Length: 246
Ligand code: ADP
Ligand code: MG
Image (cartoon, rainbow, N blue to C red; front, side, top):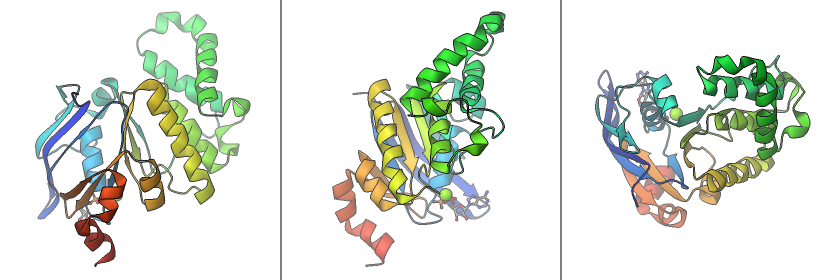
């Protein structure tokens, strides 16, 4: 099976620091891949190079065969790479539905000739998306009034408005109560299965990683030191050395 995302020989230095040093991996449609490693390992830098927020010094990032290195974040987003952030961002004064409608309008891009019908059309579609993330009942509440775990769900609906082929999630469960984390990841899994989307996520909580990733890649000092299914990675002596100093 051809990979949706193919990363090869990715490098990025900051001054004298090789933050990412020859990282390569593949990600298939319908797969949830976790990127883990200790602080400073190069996770965020790798992530930002895939999303285009940072430009790689060298190496290649291909989505469906199309090279992303050198493209602007906006263009990478247009090509089908969505993103959620470590600190969920929504417009607090807009309602839940309006946040999703804005995302749908933005996705529609130049089709503003339809603006007269847009408000209603987008509302129906927004409610469908909110249904999928379990937030339809709260559609008309301002986002600023929501619990943080619910803001995360809205953020996911906003990302889905663009129908991404690949969703990058930076520490999706950060700031959430432990009992809310499984729900958000299960929801993400459902979207992956239903849409054939792929997810690349970084995550601090090992419980979340081992419970929800199909495959894990481990970075240390900018290099990939292990890759495989959760059980194999957990038992890998190199990973244990990095995490537990054993
Ligand atoms: P992680 O996300 O795994 O904690 P990062 O990708 O943020 O790691 O950082 C990898 C290395 O690159 C670290 O040594 C970090 O200090 C360095 N680094 C990251 N971003 C910058 C930057 N903008 N300027 C200078 N050094 C950076
Ligand atoms: Mg980081």
